[in-house]
Image 1 (cartoon, rainbow, N blue to C red):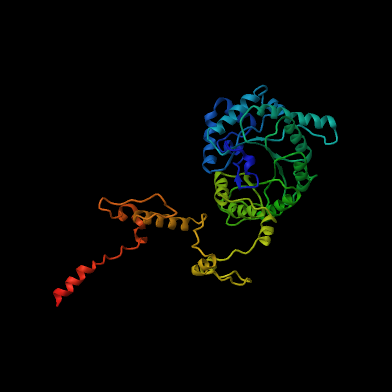
Image 2: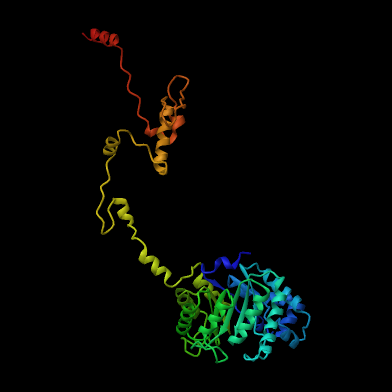
Length: 419
């Protein structure tokens, strides 16, 4: 499995939708139901993944988001964390995706940002989840849909205490860039991600594409990390004919234009959430497949400092680029007279080298010794060079043999007879 870090700032990637959406479509709605399905009916989970896998995302998210001690206690799964993590990741590995992502959701423990004891307890929840995942095989951890900067800090510090695998941090914001807790903004969250060694910064929003684009530009200005944008679908409505501020992503087609705009702004990772169907993931994949990440400012600076390349017509006709005086090329005779010898073909020019080899082969077949082929002299049994047999396609380069002249005594006798 390729290392996802090698693709940072390179090509645009699409992550699969949250796994809970796949199971929700078949009636498994709560965390306990998902965990029971993993342990008792893993084929049900595999079937739920089928359509999402067919959409073609490069990163496939496993069902690992409910593994903190407090979450396992709520579902009655104490002591089953390692088995759940192993089963969830093995199911995803079975589909052989390019990258396997292990999501971790907020633990849900009450958190007091001004209490050291509360912060330490909250951080310990994520430390234990990271320990469960440490022995497993995956490409990155996704801190999925965090709603406060304090909880995000605890999660980043807890995970980084245990492992150095790439960490993707994702916070939920509204159209104005305010986190769900109402206290912090996206810029502050991105600064925390950069300070606490997140590998990828990200946000999830259900706002219209114009606002999502503005938020993406704000995040890219704050930190130099690769950016993930998750577009949350309000609800799918076949009867809706155009986007509205309340429901901008009413069908999968709306994802295409949004993906183009976000890619042009410099976003590398794309994902859908909310009430999204696999068709939404497929639309993202189709829109940005094989696209490279655009880094704002880098391309403009490179274009400004690059020299203007001559056109193909100018290269063929020998014309100089605009603003430069044409330079006359010396003829072959002038070059030969100036050097006093026949110039040898450049070793770096494959065409000239091919011609030289062809001439050497012809001259060798004609019985001549040349600097290019000093030891090659081949003749037929009758003493005539085997030109056609040896030269093949180079026979056209050989000079035809001169016509034989008759002896003087034979010519005189012919004149006597004519008289």
